[in-house]
Image: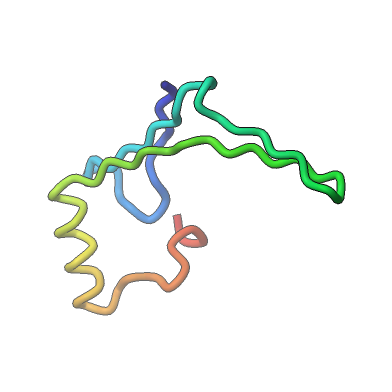
Length: 71
């Protein structure tokens, strides 16, 4: 399995990690209009420290509305 970098929106010290599934676990779908899509399983491990950090951010109103845009 491939390890990904830090997850957007979470600081590195929170210990949040993401892992891609094995290449044999992906699924390729061919659509009628000619598009092709690939689905790959991604596992995200949230630590206790990350959950507390997210709760603190939400309670103080500092949580961005679009986390992916602020990563």
